[in-house]
Length: 88
Image (cartoon, rainbow, N blue to C red; front, side):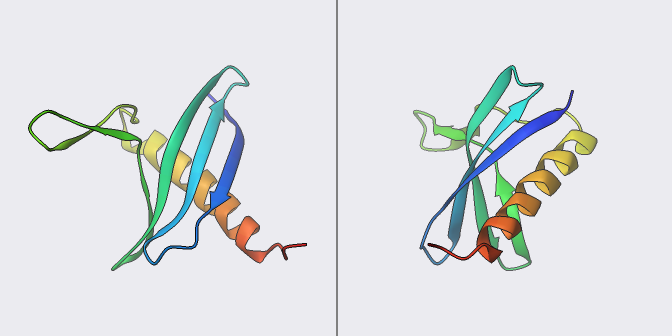
């Protein structure tokens, strides 16, 4: 499975830096990933939904660490590219 597109929507909030949409094989998209500025730096939060008991559960997530790292790297690389691009 190949990541074929990453789209970033920048946010101007203290912790939430951006939203991301990731497309796989030009055929499947996951929307609503969050780029969060945490205590140890930037990390990716998968899209989640609030359960009846008030907890949050991921509605889409990688099954293994290899895929998680690939998604995180692609999203953070694109985020850094967007942040460096001057706004017009």
